[in-house]
Image 1 (cartoon, helix red, strand yellow):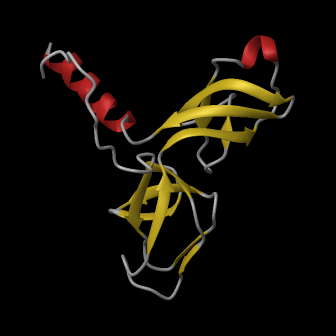
Image 2 (spheres, one colour; image 1 turned 180 degrees about the vertical axis):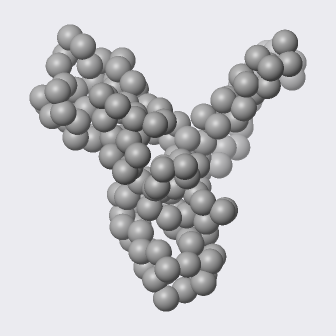
Length: 148
């Protein structure tokens, strides 16, 4: 792509932070729930799932087949979450991890959720997260490391 020499109007997909995914059979998803992908279908996050983000709406597929319903998931952005042991001095920039049971913590965890950007109060932080590109970056980094 050549360097621009004038203003260029670009068309961006609206709500680029949102992805629509098919819901697994027998699953009830609540608005704001942390969503994982298992076997290509969305469900409440469990250890080993690919992380998708947060459900924007409640979806009840308890009586449906795989893919009978869809859920919109916010996969990138900033979110206010409750976390223990926050302090202005040590929490800003700290990594937030997903524990095995899907809780978020700065203490222990199995996977990276995001980074603390600022504190709202002593128990709530604004955390930046990106699950849309995080896996592609991890795969590319791993490929470069193993090939080079």
